[in-house]
Length: 84
Image 1 (tube, rainbow, N blue to C red):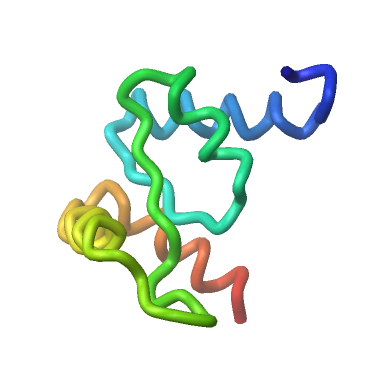
Image 2 (cartoon, rainbow, N blue to C red; image 1 turned 120 degrees about the horizontal axis):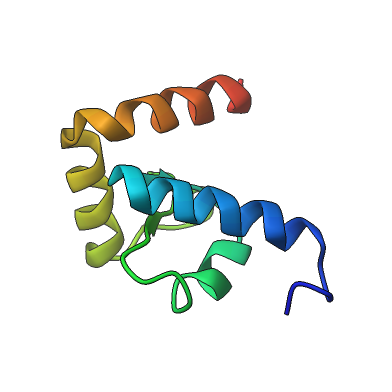
């Protein structure tokens, strides 16, 4: 799996770090969908609102929970700065 895409190793490290800190990662990167079954306890959510259509109720739920968690604020702030 990691041989196909070397950057996946970096994503795996991010996923494990988030899981260990109890952080929900806010990302559009599809690699995290591939990693989530492999990194037990890792949580991620798409940015909200997504462009191009409404989010599902479960995505909105995940994002709402993540925004209430002060530990996820840093990741959210960093994502918003990068998007500007």
